[in-house]
Length: 145
Image (cartoon, rainbow, N blue to C red; front, side, top):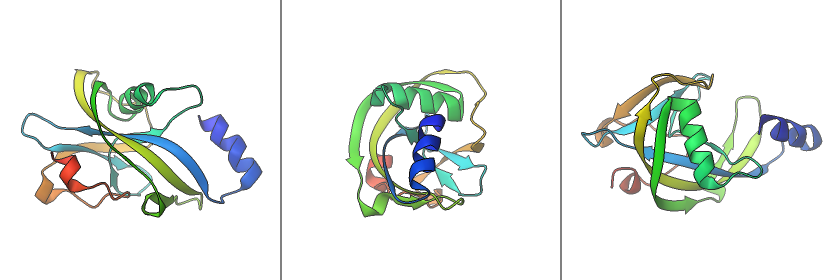
């Protein structure tokens, strides 16, 4: 996807780009939510990313979670689809995006123990009351249902 996005950005600069994406809701045995700390300093987010050309949303969520967490997951449910101006984001490099995100509930099937995505600084499970703010405004009621 990076070359696809790089090609698009070459054509449009950092103007607003509408992107299909996926995000994962993963809980530990105690019901805490897994969040990814971005190495870019952007803060915390759900394991998430853009859908690549030719990829299904289910394939995208499995790939993104593996890259960002090292977990092999099975998506068990779609919790919602989100978009609109609340899902606009400006990256530190000035690129503007608006995501249309399919939010999946996922179960960890296997843990390889390492992630391969350099965007991940750390991973941590959070209880609802201690969760840090997220870059995108997913409803907490869905994140902890």
